[in-house]
Amino acid sequence: MRHKVVFNEAERVAWHKSSYSGGGGGNCIEVSEGRSVLVRDTQHRELGHLAFASLEWNGLLATLKARQP
Image (cartoon, rainbow, N blue to C red):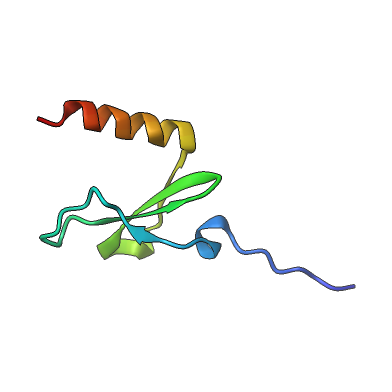
């Protein structure tokens, strides 16, 4: 019998620096968009990630955009 190795979602996704992260460094997050949106701290990747449903993530971004001066 053959066994299939399955990695968790965080291991099989591509991460990119969020366009909302500042260019000064130090306060950057990485995002991976797929069935769910994963978010992690660029400087502390080993601590894991947060997962959001796509609708929740889009709602958060819309709220943040509405609050910008």
